Amino acid sequence: MARPDRLFRLLQALRMLPAPVTAARLADETGVSVRSLYRDIASLRAAGADIGGERGYGYCLIEDGTLPPQMFNRIEIEALVLGLAEVRQMGDPALAEAAAAVLGKVAATLPSMSQQHLLHAVSRVHSFEARYPALPDMRIIREGCWREEALMIHYADKAGEVTDRTIWPLAIVYLDQMLVVLAWCCLRQGFRMFRPERIMKLEATGASFRPRRVALLRAYLAELKMPGCPPSN
Image 1 (spheres, rainbow, N blue to C red):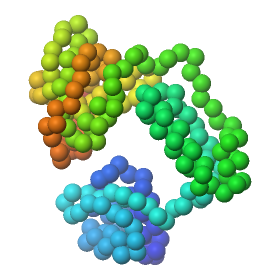
Image 2 (image 1 turned 180 degrees about the horizontal axis):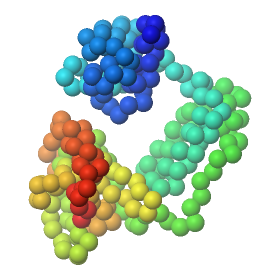
Image 3 (image 1 turned 30 degrees about the vertical axis):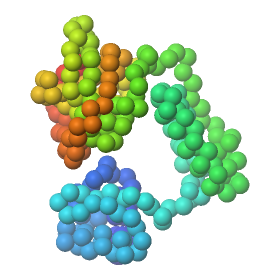
Image 4 (image 1 turned 90 degrees about the vertical axis):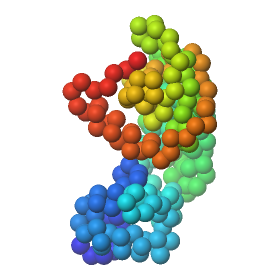
């Protein structure tokens, strides 16, 4: 593979794969040795790509200046409109507002013809019923994931038993008719799925579990693929 093509493929892998991506995975995606992969990362950085991470940790594309928004074709615009409409339907108020803001910012950067395609997209989302019950302050859960900080919850499990727990929030998962928080439960010393509507009280503790969130989430997702996966609460 020609080097420019390989570098382009490396950028694509950084865009598409869950971050941080290990050097071994990127080398496999681009068909080079790990040693050559390190040189390619250095070349992309020298060319202006903002790539975070380091050897032994993994890499992520922090800012991609090589793909201007006007490069969206019409089907990509349809996908963008549909995806953001789905977020506005199913997200909490802050997430729905953010989706509307993203759409507005994207529209402002598109050329006039693409703006018309966006405004007149044929894809629509409609829900006849509310998808999720009333939820607690999802901002606290979301920021707990972002900051890798423990949360204290007053929680009623599916049997109605109420406990106070410290959890390490790993991810928020939107299912068809259910929202769950994947977390490490310090009380049970194991992975658990928590239903936000069963959280009676919620507060941030400020206690950090950084930098363990990515590794824990990977381990949890791997367990979920196995028989007898960790239980929900």
